[in-house]
Length: 123
Image 1 (cartoon, rainbow, N blue to C red):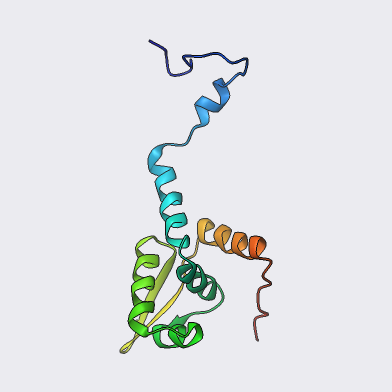
Image 2 (image 1 turned 30 degrees about the horizontal axis):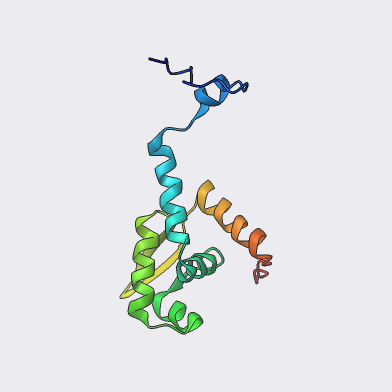
């Protein structure tokens, strides 16, 4: 039986450092969930929009040519994954990208891979 830092087959590569740095499954699960949610093109577009502004369901639906219930479904999944947050103002709920390293990295990745330029923020 092999110890943690030994592999059953030696192929001429030293893996000791790699084996000591394999992330725990729980840490990777967070990233996998984010990738799962952004694997849907609609959620990817919604997330990208919310990286640039705070918006309500009705306006997001209008931007994407979708129904409000369909957008609400996608927002619920994005919120459950921790990629977006919401706040209530009266009867209206507004959504925006969550603060943090993962949402920021995903936003930059979307724009880099898709060759998208961020819109300029108005003052």
